[in-house]
Image (cartoon, rainbow, N blue to C red; front, side, top):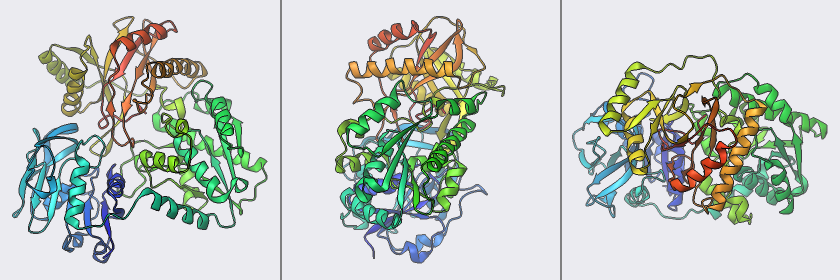
Length: 595
């Protein structure tokens, strides 16, 4: 039997992350389809059933080969996998009265081997709307949360275990201990590490690129920079050509700084294409988030094709490379059962068509941000490059929220429910007349934010954000009003105009400068600055989204001292900004970017 653990993919946002975490424990984790045969399943030391966006009782639930459960190895079901496991043995699953998205406290039976070494109460991450209502014979409860009685169950005789929470995400504080205990139950040896993986990847790239050269789009971010350095080391700089495209949606002066920095570090096979006018002209009048993302992705490829033709490169001897990482794939609905949360620029149909033809290679496609950074350090890339704040491929295009003529009316029932909840807490707030993308229960949401007013207690905001998004389905994000020049917020028509881009670039630069000056740049993983299609006193609204994360699949909002925020407000209001808001939503239910 091979020394590896299978992760059965039901389309969950975290399915591949489970394999990542198993690898982090020194055992190779391999993702397999939910239709895999008994023969395939028999090759593993243990099996993990992943989460997924479906309901097990739905007619649209992913096909599952239940023969896998005949394998005499330990099986762990996570979220959807937990529900599927219990139902497969005769239990019952139903829609929960209260949904759980974000942190919950697990009361664990620490005498059970799955929870060995855990605290009696442990913070774990939840993302579910369904729950196990009745257990099958032979199963017992080994853990509960306030809202979920069957948060962890076990059939010790059959070595079948189910947990409703997600141990694989960073913000499950003792989640890695749970996975470590499961590996021990499987009896797997710890013989895998990133050094081994990098060596295997280099051999794979040599084979993939045999007889061909590689052309790579280099944004200057962590992913594309590591991919560029890796290809340079494997193939040699004479077989690799990098192109940086300024799409007009970069940060202030960023393209110039990227080119200077990379060339200073010895990347002399890199050229610049200035395509600001083309991108902004194609985005004129476009407001829908998915439409913007697809236009940006398609335009990147159009500029690339133009550059390639100008170099007179023979398509039979050149391959295109992308710095795609696994979150790009899974959020774009890139596995069979996954829901599309948002289409990343490197996952538009044109790019997928090239990928299917074998004309694109993606060296980092199996990795998460934390693994990419580890590889970058192993490759000798300077610290300042490896630990730059992540920046989305579409750039500020997804931080310039737009409003078209579509109906964004607020449900009266949601407004009523919110006011009842806020009144009970003695807090002021309202639903905002716009929508943003979120992820709840492994599926995409497009719903309203809630604005909290006149409150300066981070813990109150944290607790309220969880309670509001769990209870009111028309709200997937909560923001706090830091400062404002008025009371009435008006929705406006807006697109990615040059004027809005330049305003956001200047505000974003001041915010980044503040993080560096206050020694917060290293402690905050990323801080999107968002310009909303809302005004107060005819001036636009800015939202800060500072978060802490490791791999972008889950995130906590970061608490910045209010004195720093007040000083920041004094700077940006002089630039014509009418209000400063602060996003206090975790992921889930709110994605890191608003679009």
